[in-house]
Image 1 (cartoon, rainbow, N blue to C red):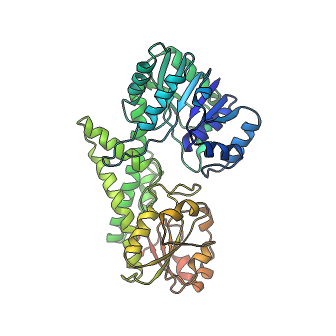
Image 2 (image 1 turned 90 degrees about the vertical axis):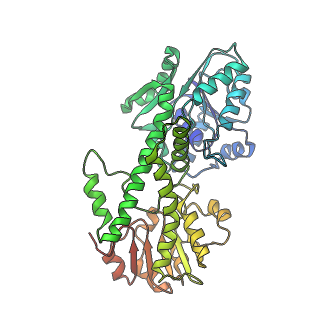
Length: 439
């Protein structure tokens, strides 16, 4: 089938490349000529393991092409996916749908035949209705169907998630043609026995937000349990394991840390809160999750200052990891941003190292010195803080780090290292959700 993907950001580029790898003919459209030129030359606009090879191989095979010309890109398309950004709108926190609506209008002006328009972007309930209205207002003669097909990709594992999904959700208004087209597009996944779930269009839109809000709630719950563990002398990792072994709860997203960040959870939880308020069906649990998570990030800065004896002025703090999670260069709402601000407000000097995120992070952290590796960052530092759990930080030479530092203080915000190992290397250790006991 011929597929057009509007937008070559994280969702659009990964989805387009994976569809092409299934054997479909895919055209990716983006207004940014520089981005298109970079992709065509093999330079990816994001860091995602395996994406450069996937794009290159399918482009070489002729199944994946790129253009800035939307009218040319949508010509003869069986399905047109809208995969543009929906950031939080300044001022009120609602999802900014201006890019989605602009794409819908331009698609309508450019279409030359019947097609299925698919919203791949994360959008609030009712957006598909508005997309359909926009298209029909511009071109009432068009034979179109509008479908919701939310993505559930994890940054750092997006290609695997796309090809081996837990489920594929497709929301329609009951159109047999739309169901047939979407079924054909995702038919290659039948080999992996991925359930193709058809729902109403508004239901599909809400499923995406409900899923992200629930996962964000699990993270925030275990983070609050970590605070209680510290207060009462318990160990949060054992609490997490003890409840996660219950099949009704599950172990995923129960790892205490500095709070969630990234391109999805912060904006999606906020957008869901705003939707609930607009429809007079407030979601109090998610409202609290948003508030608690925001406060937690800066609280990690205070935790570091406390580990320094309560005074960080003139001290050097080394941060390992800046991105919101490993295997990405995404700095959107990363906990490190709030941690850096809190430490700078306390008068600390900051040195940092991240395997992939420093180029993106540097403009956001003008006062931070970027190091060449973890050992360079730690040299002469008064504290070492593990912020992001990159694999490269899981087996560091702790003795080498300790002897190079001004004071061997380790604040492990991801609970990677056992206390006995850290203290044997000469460090004093502060963990999350631990009052000094060890499992």
